[in-house]
Amino acid sequence: MSNSQSFSNAANRQNKTVLITGASSGIGLEVAKIFRASGWNVVATMRNPENCELAQDEKILCLPLDVTRHETIENTIETAIARFGSIDALINNAGYALVGAFEACSQVEIERQFATNVFGLMAVTRAILPHFRDRRQGIIVNVASIGGKLTFPLYSPYHATKWAVEGFSESLQYELKPLNIKVKIIEPGPIKTDFYTRSMSVAQKPGLTDYDHYVARTLPQMQKPSMASPPEVTAKVVYRAVTDGSWKLRYPAGGGAGIFMALRKLLPDALFQAIIKAGIER
Ligand SMILES: NC(=O)c1ccc[n+]([C@@H]2O[C@H](COP(=O)([O-])OP(=O)(O)OC[C@H]3O[C@@H](n4cnc5c(N)ncnc54)[C@H](OP(=O)(O)O)[C@@H]3O)[C@@H](O)[C@H]2O)c1
Image 1: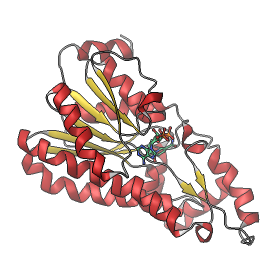
Image 2: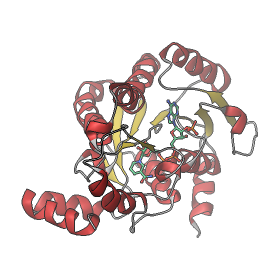
Image 3: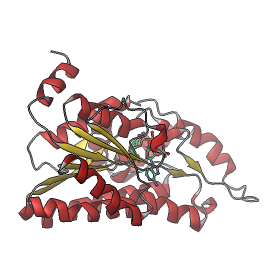
């Protein structure tokens, strides 16, 4: 049986609802497609729903949501509940990377990075918790990264956000377990999406040239990762995290994530860093 057949068959047996942030492209878009193919109601939220690429039907609701605009989040959740009756799973997927030499990043750029990847994710989580508590059920899936457990050069603000998501999620699961609310962390490795192109913000500071040589020989390797997987791989892991019935917390999800994480765990710092340098600094 093909994957899409097995997703479809599972589908017709239930009528659940998932709400996804950042569903306009990449991983979020593929997550929306997999849940829809499995019979779920899908609330695909995005900054510009007029660009929604999902085939519209009665089980798809595209809604506007910029996770940095906290005042709009509750409205979006209420609209989704009014349409489908309840929400069973939240996928906190919206995010992007601010890259470059740290010194070249402005305070505004760094705060925007945290506003999206951390405070936005927290705000959506806080907004959905009353609904999950009322129902004594719900699943929160936070899309972190292998970059929440290890680091690469020139991604320091991004790593800081993803390490924050890891710590936030791991601590949160303790208090939510007695309420039957699950927290899951998805840890993708490199995935072929707009993450490395349209979505990426490259910091530059006029007159700051001391990093130019390092950035020029390093950043291109980071923007074309050799082990990148298609986003469907990660989307399938998200689907599994929501539907496997377990309390498992972490899910490596494509792009060699399992290998990266195993090496990080097993190797001493100096050896791991030497491998990263050999692979990325040219
Ligand atoms: N690709 C990778 O290698 C990789 C690896 C590890 C983790 N991740 C994580 O996976 C998640 C999805 O990224 P992706 O790879 O699928 O990249 P992507 O194709 O660029 O998708 C990013 C999504 O986030 C949305 N977004 C950005 N800022 C937002 C905001 N303020 N409010 C709402 N939505 C916002 C984008 O919306 P617009 O269309 O409006 O810009 C887009 O839908 C991110 O959290 C990323 O950190 C990616």
